[in-house]
Length: 251
Image (cartoon, rainbow, N blue to C red; front, side):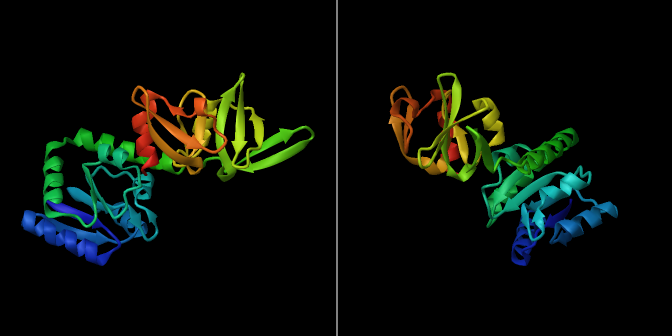
């Protein structure tokens, strides 16, 4: 089996090569590329392999840009020191996702998975990786321009505590408790706001993670949060959102 390593840390690349030799002496590492640019050039010139080991964070950007720019139908095992890059999505859309320092048994298991997949599986995975990367690149709103009488008020998203739906309108509530009606539904806002910072805890409220002071268990498998300017009866995380909320809060 021929492999290519895309990794900008020399020691990490050498460590991976050593592990591969221990697992299977027949695995040959054809090339090690340390940048997006060099990798794209090599693939455009016709280089190929049976399996790619790809670090997510390279010196010249995120390695997903490689697959966004050129067609690659080679199976991928991601390796990275970071765990914030949509782990679940990339676990689903690649052979595996290994956190550094990569361990021998983890790598052995990943190679075992590689042997179980079909070519059609790999094609679908790569299509999904490009889609996830493009979603990550989406530009979210950084501020809201709100008309107040004859004036326009600019509110940065970082200054927003939460949005709440009350009496048929959506209210933007700032960290200093200034309240402004906005011409968006909560569904629309959910697609406009950065999901790393905002979460819809129930049918009424989208909360900013920085405004949450504490959270605790509540009746009927739900969670109750404490946040400035948010009333108690609006601060319950609905049961169907509890697991996602816990994961979001722990990122």
